Image (cartoon, rainbow, N blue to C red):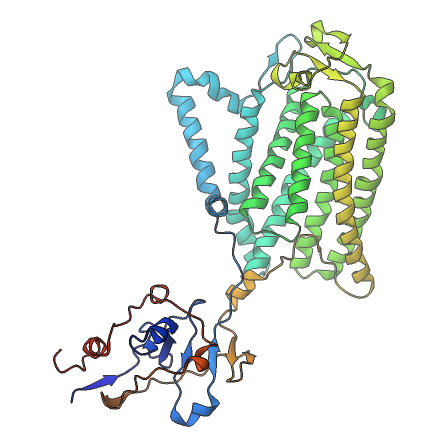
Length: 509
C-alpha cells in the first residue's frame, strides 16, 4: 500500500481546506479540497485544521473585509487611471502641444491660442471675448492638474515628513489643504487688487454701469479665465479622487459656480463675477489653515482659526453675498437699460427690441460683437442661480454650526463637511493585519485585537485506507458559502480513482 506524506509547505499557517458545495451535491469526489497556496479571499470560507483534542472547540478564522473601493464601471476605472497619472498626463499633453507649436509653423495659428489671450484690440489696448478663449481655459485646466499633483507630491509631501505626520490619510489631507491655501492666497490677492483698482470698489451700483462693456484689460481677462479653468478642474478633482461625504454638494457647488462664471463672462457681467469670487476665496483662506493646524496637533490654534473662519464665512457668504444678490434684484433695473445691443465698444448700437426667440440668448457666446440682450427674464435667471448657490452655502453653514457647538461643549474643531469619509478605507488597509475575526461553532463572530498564534504544520504518515473521503451532511454545511470550482481556481477530480492518481496513491499511477 502506497503511503503519502502530507505537509503544509507554507510554514506560517495551519493546513487550510476549502469546502466545495457543488462537488458534494453532484457526488463527484469529496467535498473538501486543499488550497495549496493558503490563499484567503472574500469568495472562500476558510477553516483551520485543528488537532483532535480541539475538535469540539473548533474556531474558524474569517478575514476582515476591506472597505468598498471605487466603482468598477468603465467611468470609475477611467477616473482612477487619471487620478494615478495626473502628472504624466499633464506633462505629455503640454509636451505634445509645445512640440506641435515649435515644429509645425502652419499649426501655430491655432496652437498660439492655448498660450495667449485672444481678441486683442490695438486701438484700445484691451481684449474682447469669444470662443477662442476656450483654448486658454483648456490649457490652464491641464496646467492646474499637473501643477497641483507636482506641488503635493514633491513639495508638500516631504513637508509632511518634516512636521511629523505619519499616517497616510493625514499626509494626503495636509497636502490637499496646503495646495488650496496656496492657490486661494494667490488668486484672492489678485482679485482684491483688481477690485480695489476698479470703480465698483465698495459700491455695488457701479457693478452694472457702462453695460455692455465688451472689452477688459489683459490682466483681468487672464484672472477670470484662469479662475474659470480652476473651477472646471475642481469638477475633475472631486471625481478622480476618493469621494467625501459631501461629494454631491461639492459637485453641485462647482457646477453652479462654473455656469455662473461662463454666463457672466459671455453677458459682460465679469465685474460682479470678480466680486463674488473674492467673497468666496477669502473664506477658503481660513478653512485650510484651520485643518492644517489640526493635523499638526495645534488644537488651540485650530480652534481659534476655526472661530475666525466661522465669522468670516457668515459675513462674506451670508451678508455681503446677499447684498450683491439684492443689488441684482434692485439696482440692475436702475442702471441697465433693457434691450439688445450689438457691435464693438467703438461702434455699439442699441438698445434694440428683444427678439421673441431662444437663439438670441446664445448670440453672446457665438459672436464677440454679436447681439447681446438683457431683460427681466435674464436677470431672474442669474439671480436664481446665485440663490441656489446660497442654499448650498446655508447647508454647509449648518454643519459648521454643529462643529462650533461641539467645541463649546469641550470637543475639538473638526470640519464635518468633507474631511471625514463615509468609510475609513485607508485605515482598514493599514491595519488589516492588526485584528481578525473568529467564528465559534454556534456562529458568533468575535473580533480579536491581537495577531493569531501561528500553528506549526502537521506531518503525519497516512494510508489510503485511513483517508476519510466521505462528504459531510448537507445540513452541516449550510453555513459555508457555495463556491464553484471555477471561482476557486481548483479543478475537482471526476471520480475517486482519478483523485488517488492525482495525489500519487493509486497503484496504477
